[in-house]
Length: 391
Image 1: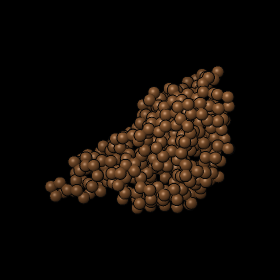
Image 2: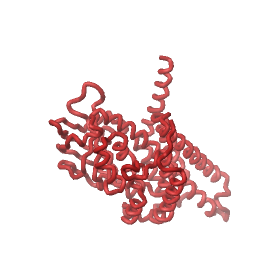
Image 3: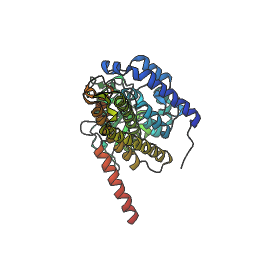
Image 4: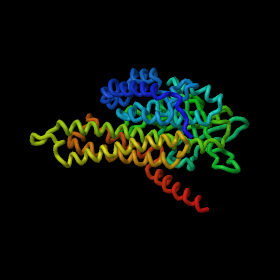
């Protein structure tokens, strides 16, 4: 069933234009500084907050812009054009952390947390991944033990985005005692300042400088019943699967944005750089590489838009997100590789945009479910759908 977005098309067009201008005029010129300092400058953070970017996908009733997923992906493709760490700064607020509250929180939980999340006053982190549980949440070892009306959480999370600046952790844990039915995974809202919460040092990563990730440990962290998302321990696993699927479409859109940037950089370089007095873009094998890059970008953009529409109208919220993420994140890896090839030795130099893109996009095939997990979701889903027809 299709529904009209809260933000009309003409208003959204103006919002998107402002975001595009911000990315190209304010962020792109600062990319080297972001990479060198491994941080987003404070003035860019303030401007992003003033523009509503910390809450663009949060409903308007809670202080956000209220963009739906078809609009979200258009924003993501623009944000993906520059350093991915910019988007990471507010990505969890709009995405996998904020959407858990939007989709599964109680009215009280929404009113307590969502306005601050939308304004950027609160940074929310999605604490799901563990050393033995990444793409498959069923391997969780973090526990939440019932103690009267309270819950006591123990465990360790890793690679948690924005952990070092988080105000709120959206924590997934296995309930103890285990329920009679279901998988026993619940989700809790844990303030970063709660006793027993410890955030580790910032991770040193291959790329995405400026994006802060770290380990988070929970040592006898006591929270009240109001911390249980939805007021129901059975909500957790369904929330994780639903929000991760939505996030996969968003990540696919980011991949398209990065691929477009890599293509643009490569076309500009091929048109101006010469070998033997001839622009390398005149060489047919270079043209072939550019053609393959452009084909991937255009196919990815169409796929992302189709998957977003299927999510919004409810026709496909499982297979299409995985298809989009699988194709687009694999595509951008190939495009980034070709971009370095077009640039030759120049493309291997640290301050050249395609070198950064080459490193940054490698992560896209890993988080929100690896490419291998996406293949299992797609293939298994197709088989099960066919079996239902014949059963």
